[in-house]
Image 1 (cartoon, helix red, strand yellow):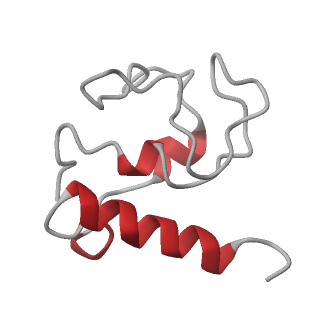
Image 2: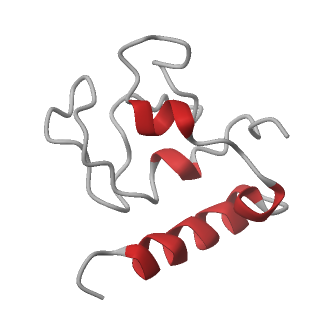
Image 3: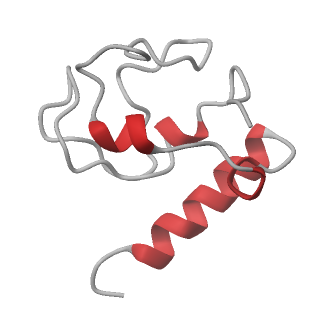
Amino acid sequence: MTCRLGCGACCIAPSISSPIPGMPAGKPAGVRCVQLTAGNLCQLFGDPARPLVCQSLQPTATMCGDSATEAMVWLTQLEAATRPGI
């Protein structure tokens, strides 16, 4: 499966604890990555500066659903379910 162009859910919904260019402390869940363009494309795609966690995330039918909205809901629920201390 390939990414749905213009979705961006995986760059908004999850928290990222590793540094991102422009976000040295990473990003909290639900916050738009500064590397996400207005068209919801990653400016670091294919760049070695892209965090390893981002490079390793692969789109799946379950994660992406049938729309960007479904992807956002699923990833937000996954983030909440895997938050430390819950």
